[in-house]
Length: 70
Image (cartoon, rainbow, N blue to C red; front, side, top):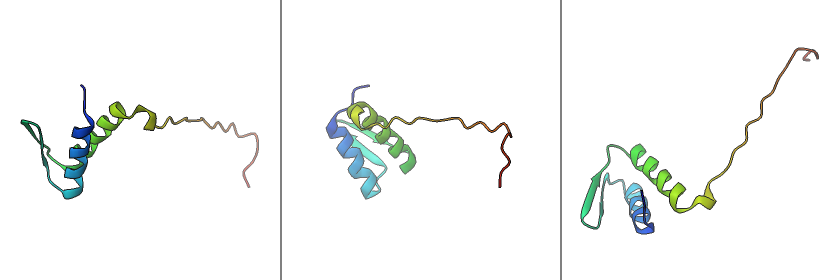
């Protein structure tokens, strides 16, 4: 789905003001909660600004018990 920066900014302003209804042009979207709005904002950010996403690495730690812990 293609989002616009205008939609992103409108949703961001709605979250700050605490409103759960957002109008984009001729369409109105009613969100159930602020958490749903934040999730939609996160999806928009990932699509509009891919350079902002962080890449996390996870490392496994294996302890075979060879060295006693102090």
